Length: 269
Length: 279
Image 1: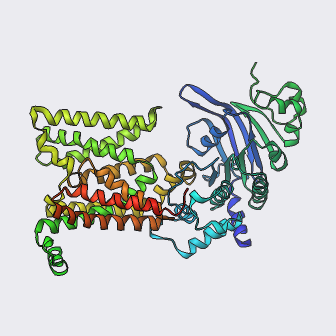
Image 2 (image 1 turned 90 degrees about the vertical axis):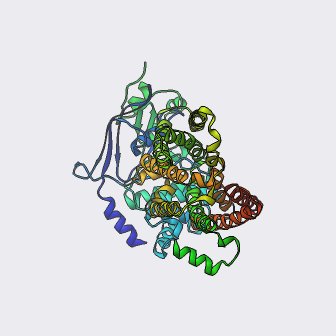
Image 3 (image 1 turned 30 degrees about the vertical axis):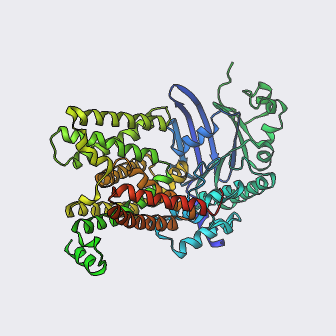
């Protein structure tokens, strides 16, 4: 396991930061996101918060390439050069799939990691690799289970393990633990927080759990069509007004004064 | 073919197997069955039952176009037509905001109507009813060879693309994050389904071909927990139903395709009650 982590760190060194510049998304005539400028550092957990319909999931999907976007997304290495295409891991909000499908956890891993058709079975090596990945999130006992038989928390851990193999440069998580109980949430955040340090991951996490975010995120971005404000959790979340305005719209000027760094985006009149 | 005939004579010394048309049909069933079982597993996983149904029904229009163009055997025109239609439906799904159900339902109804209008011109629809019911007993060795090639094609496609199909069927965003060109792969799968359905339609019949595609997989998924078992059970069900249906239809003098489908349906009902988990 230690070896694994070391090689992963070597691999992960390629990407140093991810920059979104003038990023925007329109679907049809509806402008969902505009003028997004975010700088995501390696080894940092960036939490996206904001009201429903504010474009958080859309932003992730646009970064993923599922939805077309305007503006630029740049993956840079340490010397600010364009790096190779990064490995992206994605953990969806909840897996919207056919509960009756006879897909086992092992099937899912094998389909992602190899080209040998899963319907012909899998090699011992692959099984061990999948088990090791799952052990990482304390889920190795789930290897042979059907996806449809997993509980919400189990499923999210499996999806996290999948997103981490191979170790990504950028990990995108869309409300990964919505609907999971408090203990499950705590475990999940601890896990993610440790992984970030171990692997030097850039993580973008969409979340509504402000208390979890307050404890585990390095940076918070408040998003509603554009970036309303960004800063350390202490700065963003200790502000009563901001908390009240969550779901409202913007950081008022008083908030801006307290938040020294990175205030971006136009403030609507 | 000679080898097959000798094989049947040697190992299946029954009266029914002495007819050449039964030997052809038996081989055809053994080829079509696994092909449909394999394809069906993914069609069901992708919730594409309605889509494959539409491709089947739309082949009426394919036949009509072939007949209008003066072809005795409209298979090639049907194939081209169904591939074009498959791509068209895929694109239509992408650009329209209506639900997939609505898009596919409309296409299906329009194509059936168009096919009936064209084929019934001058009152000659009756001679095309063989396409509706299917007639596997009339299959020729050349056509059996075509089925064998199609089965080979499906196996090849599965060996190259299966894992990608599977990942997309589980979650498109995850598939995309792993660098799979989701839209292209989806279109490839739609086209492959269209080809398999169209090639087999005159032997199985337009009215029931979808049941033949869907039921084995639907039955298999009731009792299996991973992809390997899913495929094995689905293939076994189609082989058993295929052979049993062929024999029963021979003795009962019924349409073969429909008889096979009824036996597959029995499997489906049985597995429904055997279902190990109530998920």
